[in-house]
Image 1 (cartoon, rainbow, N blue to C red):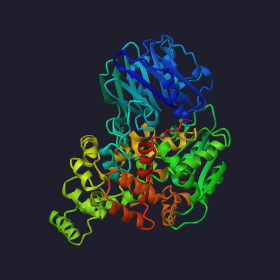
Image 2 (image 1 turned 90 degrees about the horizontal axis):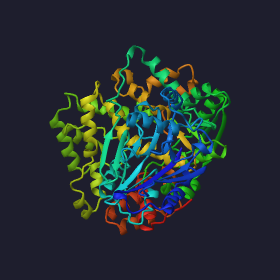
Image 3 (image 1 turned 30 degrees about the horizontal axis):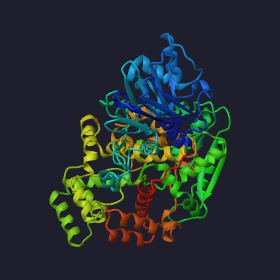
Image 4 (image 1 turned 180 degrees about the vertical axis):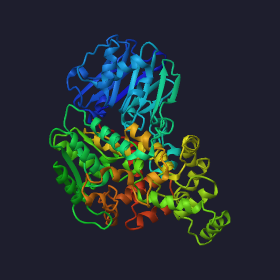
Length: 635
């Protein structure tokens, strides 16, 4: 796991400066503190940087940027190819020789030499990499299928700059940071910036499952090489449990491949417990598990530490836990936003950072995490509620005139702020009612939040435009077009890669820790993406497929416990303030920009315990660090 960066000047001028690559490496040092490398082409117009977190092949021969023997191909690579040993045997049989003993980086590069970009079809892993192909005279940027690893880039008439994190791109002296207006509009819908946009104007992120190429004159080409529906594997539902159990075990086994110790984040929920159980069965030694709790019991968030302890005892792990207080968020929140790069409005960033820190303190460099299981196996309570509402709205007993009548009543009595008004409108417009698992504000509330002048600028924007192409592709390619499959598909396109996986990447890498996500193995995704509703949801119960697989393997207390997401007691902490003068931070942002109405923001600030304040605060701190103060740290 590493930090990658690079620059390509078009038309072979000006020259790449070593100092510039060094600066990018320095600012990405937290992603890879074990080594720094740089490579500059013979023509001096292309340069790659790399910071290394040593996981596989700890020797210096595996350092990056990595150049093949012919010196025609160069790679800077972030991630892991878990099946690299199998691919290496194929390449050996084809006559390739290797400089390294156990490097997946060299296998990746020589796979490209042999198969071109078709090589990604063979990889089982997570990756964001850049390859310079001196034969084709092109740079290729590639992001893994599901988007576990991020890759950002900026292009202008003179150059391409890319990196694992935006802050390295901000070192470009020609770039003046500005807020992207379309992204701030979508942010209030999705709590993140849907790819390819970012919150920074002119800085983009590569979409999951996509590659992008540039030639020496700046001509670009982009292609989506994978989609879960296009590459789906329809499974015989008669033996679905057996097939999925085998795939999950295999995925977890692959993610144990490492030359350093691997741990597990353990919340005590079924996802992390399944992960920990199967991983412990694969391990030849006692594994380490890590949990986060809080300094006292809170009404809004019940402690899960006892459940984590039950699982740890069951699998006989060496278990470590840490309890957080409000001071921990107070002391970390500015660093958190700095490491996020762009606003990731998920407060779970806080416990993820501290559990990563705990793991690193116990000499762990790699941890398995449970993200993705809720999306694949229908594990959210609000998804079940949305599924029921969808059934109601599409029922013949709920005709169009009744929906219109309810909306008129909402308008008359000024209750348009209700989320249900959005669902009714979407149903009337023949749109799916599910727009992602992270909506914070209704369309009416968003309209109230924005200033009059900003609304004039964004009147052509519609968050449906971000969803529409995915919905059209879903309807064209899904065999089972139920809303349950649509929820999984849409979240794989927006919320998972740009919010959930971003928070994992940024918070773990801030601690120089690699996170692996077995439930988002692409083969597992392909097997679960297009299932009949009666297989995915039974008797209105959540995650039945996964629970069936681990019944008898995990304690009943874990299997039968009430669903609880990983979180923190933000409601209580906001009631008395976080201790950072968040009101002033938000008011400064609102008064010095022209995006929001002061009166509406003030209402949210004054409403005790309104956790939506977090979304505005996250944005305000980000603006202060990156736009107003323009102060970048160099590790």
